[in-house]
Each structure stands twice: as structure tokens, then as C-alpha cells.
Amino acid sequence: MSHFTTKNDYIELSPALNEDDEPPDIRRDQYSLEGKRSASIHRASMEALLEEATHLEPNPASHPWRLIVQSLPSLIISLIGLVVAGVLMDEYQHWQVFVNTSELFILLPILLNLKGNLEMILASRFSTSANMGELDYGSSRKSLMLGNLALLQVQALVAGAIAGLASFALGVLTRPDTGGSYYESVYMTACSMVSASFSSAILGVFMCALILICRQYRINPDNIACPLASATGDVVTLILLAGCAMILQDHMETLMSTFVFLSMLLAVPFFGVIVWRNKRIKQLLFAGWTPIVIAMVISSLAGVVLEHYVEKYKGIALLTPVLIGVAGNLGSIYVSRISTCLHQDTEEDYASVERALFLMNIPVQAIFLLIIWAFNMGDLDYNFWFFLTYMMVNLICTFICLKVGKWMTLSFWKMGYDPDNYVIPYLTATIDAIGTVLLVATFSLLTSSGASNMQMPAQPTN
Image 1 (cartoon, rainbow, N blue to C red):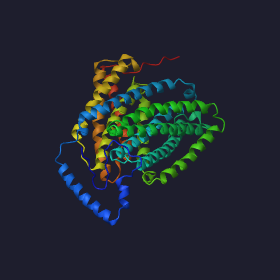
Image 2: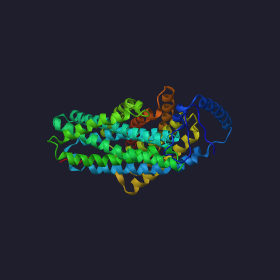
Image 3: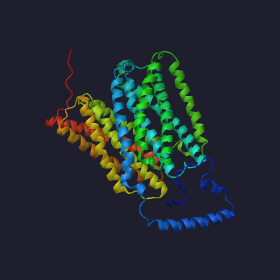
Image 4: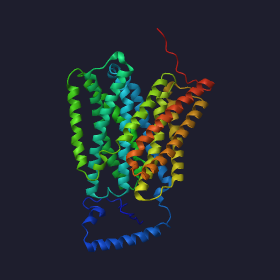
């Protein structure tokens, strides 16, 4: 099989990872005049080959069945992760640490949204680097891995600080009678930053290793990286947040939380310097923050809607994360694939890929419905109308997510922005809002029409 370079991009699709060589684009700067002449002749030959290659049959690696075989297991794993995260959140609400500090429940969705976006951005960006051949050489691979991991730490620490302060402020605004102290604000921020930093370190290394393994075995990481990042990220972050909150709560009225907070704060410039000295990553240090913050605001508004109706309709808290999570994962796969094609100057088979991703959603959601029905989770009224309306809302959300993801990716590329760094936060926040509103509207329609009783039973009064 032949592989080609386009424009100034080097694409090496060999599964062998070279430890000592440098990519040709680095060595090209060291060419003599004679070498440059040879390179010109070589480029002319490659252009002729590319012209001839346009008449070849499509690469079998881009076949929809290849996409389904690679993506479906990762989507099922992400579904299991979403269910486990939901079970953990349901369990945590009874823990003493969460009862004593109710702001931790406000922190959870904000932190998970921020962290999820960071990990999926890393997965998308690193997948593009893998498919561009930038990870096939020891020097560039090491530089990209260290730079991306350091950048992820900067983003996680800043995002953790924002999430911690925002949750404390929202807690004070929604429950002004409880007041708020300095110790509590530092406690919330420290818990958020520690859990964000450690989970990013664990998941960052995991994602880098996963993508390198995919590259080694000729698996397209665009098809699996984002769903796995989403699935593992929520569970790991939840466990770390609960553990950190339990440890620090015993010392809330001391300066321990302040010491932890300052230590995390000092780590930001440390990792920032590492990123700044990395010529491959430094331009990302100040890029991509706007979509992350805007996505947090949009998702928080969706969370307000969800919180308003979670005590009114049964199963909302169980169904919403899976509904929007699976749709978001499918959209992220599509965005990651399109972005790679744009970087490679190749064409994505939009119709086939959209159809494959859309149809994959059906068995994944069917497995989810089977699980919650078998274990009677959510105390839902399981009848034909419930299953029908949920699947309809699910398919609508997936369709919107795929179409909006494609439009956003192409639009950001035309405006000169790298879709890997900008699209996923906007896309996931959009589907958060749309999915939540549609599910609430559907439950309201089912209840009012008498087709299915989704009304939460009235609480007994003392």
C-alpha cells in the first residue's frame, strides 16, 4: 500500500514507531541547496503520484464497517461508564461528606463537564497527530506527549479552580441562609483542583498510551479515543473528588485546604513554563479557553433546568446523562474524523459515516434500556410509549449532534481555527441543553396525555 504526503504535511502510516529518527519536515530545514533541488524534484514526482492516486479505489480503512467494528465496543464501554458514574452519584448523595457540604453536588456536574471537554479535546488533537504521522518518530512523539500532558495539567488546574469557585458561589446564591466562609470556599476549590489535576494525569497518560497502541495496530484512534476519554473521565474524577473531599473535610477549619490550594496554584506556572518551551504546543497555551468557559455556562443552564425537574419526573437524573452522553460521544467521533481529514487534505465520506454513527446509536441505547428495565432502575413506568418516546428523543439528539458537529467543524476550519481545540466543547454543551429540554418536554407530554405516568410520587408530609 502506498501512502503520500500532501502540501507541507508529512503523513507516515507505517505501524513501526521509530525511536531515533526525525520526521522529514525537521530534517528538510537542514538541506543544502543540492538537497533542496532534489526535494523539489521529489515533490513534483509526488504530485504526479497524487494526481494518479485520485483515480484509485477508496482506502478500505475508511469503510463504514471498519468504523462500526472499531467504534461500537468503545461506545458500549462509554455507556457502562455513564451508568457507573450515575450509580456513584446516587450513592454519594448519602455519604456524610456530601450531606455536610451540599455544594459538592453543585460542583459535580460543572467539574465533570469541564474535565470531560479537556480530555476529549486531548483525544481529538492527539488522534490527529497520530494520523498525521507525527507520533511515528521518537523526537516528535516525546515532545508532543510531554507538551500535551503539561498543557492538560494547566487546563485542568485552571478549570478546577473555576469549577470550585463557581460551585461555592452558586451554593451561596441558592442557599443564602447557610452563608459561606473562607475555609469552605478554599475547601471547595482545593478539592476541585486536586481531583481535576490527578484525574488528568491518570487519563492523559492513558489516552496517550491508547492512541499509540492504536497507531501500532493500524486502528484509527478517531473512532475510539473520545468515547473512552469520556467514559473513564467521569468515573475517575468522581472517585478522586469523593476521596479528596473526605480527607480534607476533617481539616476544613484549619489551613490544610489553603496549603493544598496554594500548592495547586503554584503548579500552574510550573506546567505553563513546560508548555511555553515546547515549540509544538506553546501556541495552545492561550488558545481554546473561550469555548471551554462558554460550554460550562451553557451546561450549567442545562443543569438548572435538570435540577428544577429532577424532583418532578421519575428517571430524569438517570436518563439524561446517558442520552446526552452517547449522542455527544458519537458527535465527537465525527468531529475528530473530519478534523483529521481536514488536516490531511483528504475527503471524509460524510453520508456513509453519518449513517453508520446514527445507526450505532440504536443498539447502544437498546442495551441501556435493557439494563435499566432488568434492574428496575429509576422506578420508571416501563411501557411501550416510554420506550418509543425515549428512542425518538435519542435519535433526534443524535441527528442534531452529527449535523451540528459537521457544520461547526467545517466552519471553524474555514475561519482559521483548529477544530480539535474548539468544536467539542460547543457541541457537547449544545447537546446538553437540547437533550435536557427535549427529555423534560417528552416526560411532560407522556404524563399529561396519560400514556405513561412519569410523575414523581408525592412526598409524605409529617
